[in-house]
Image (tube, rainbow, N blue to C red; front, side, top):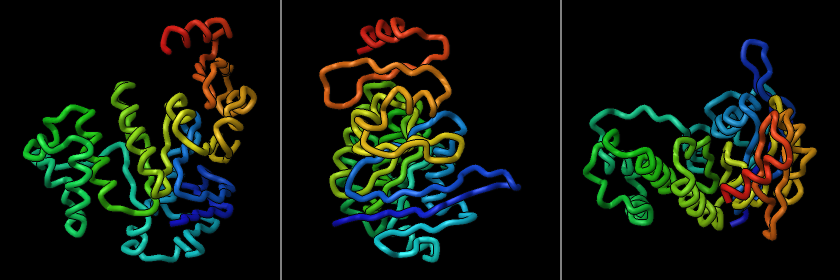
Length: 261
């Protein structure tokens, strides 16, 4: 199924302070889109605005030519689902309770994803007793089971090690074969290797949007982060690892890249 998400000059402000301005894009799916930028650039605000958690100040938002801003929340929730980094969960809530919450109509789906993410042995465990990696898998499975055509994720794997994060990115990459997945992330390496399109945010505006091969240029990264970025060339089709450091030299970046990768 073709998925079209179109934003036309979206803006958001709080107490006269503009947090997002003139956000315009046309994303088609299925595909995996990464949203990257420095702290305070507006990544989380954009994700929450698209999810309907924040009220648009100006602009329009369309899904397959439907005006998303005019849809009631119950209808919108069948189109867009959100996985946020922080969830308020009751201390004694079991994993199975979390998976079935709002998922009563998707019983086959939550069972499918609990098996796919290896959660079956954890179903009778309390959520707080799980490791951060296990908690991330539970919340991801719960969100995927909703089967919405658009999936939004706001820094969902921020506290995981690289190996755990890579595994979950692989799952998102598979899901992006049938839906539009938009993820805000600080991990430039994984974004560049898994996303098919990137949105670079700077101070609440889109600095660049396009394929990773086109957007991951030294000039774009320098202007997005206000720091020196170095591109380490390799033989892969995707852009190589970028190491950002205010006082780093190009040689330091190459050495760091060789040690890590």
